[in-house]
Image 1 (tube, rainbow, N blue to C red):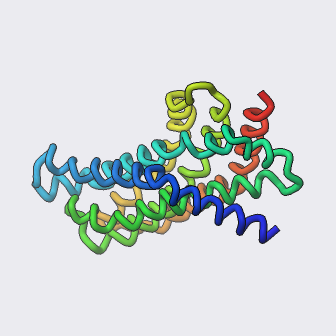
Image 2 (image 1 turned 90 degrees about the vertical axis):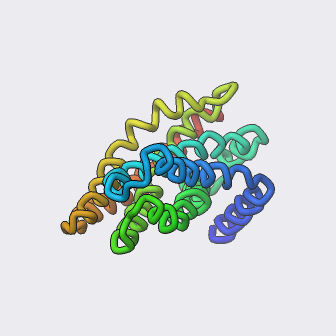
Image 3 (image 1 turned 120 degrees about the vertical axis):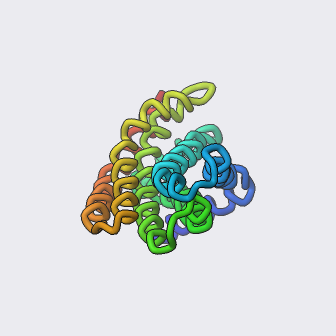
Length: 224
């Protein structure tokens, strides 16, 4: 089973190198939204700091959503997805590897950009580690929940970007509230452990249940 997981990860890495736009587009979108925001509202540090957590989290949410429509589509179109469903290996584990790769290529890279972009929004360095931890946990939840919508819309002709957004955005609201709440508490010097525990609980819950929903969605898409 380990060899199957490793081979699948290698395949995903190779596909990422062949289609760099799939990786770069969400990162460029994330950086552009945060870079343009100070130009729109002005350079006043207190105002930027007050809005920074909301801007960063909304940009991360939309950047993740931007990358989700193609998560399973190429596998569906070239028949790989059907082979996954017919494979003797657990489909839940295969889709979990796929989501792990998506999180590494989207969520983790967004986190690596965050310290630089956070300073553009006048965030103090003392809260940057908290922001990075919440984004690491939060983007993992966003990838897992988003993959459910991508699985349910994979069989739609002409793409299902709008339907995907309508399905997934309501599920993203708790992550957005906890993420911005954590940052607001950190900026005010309040304890953030409670927020981080809630975010960790969301991540564990999504990791436990999402692969089952993703696998069910893919079976429905392939059977139609």
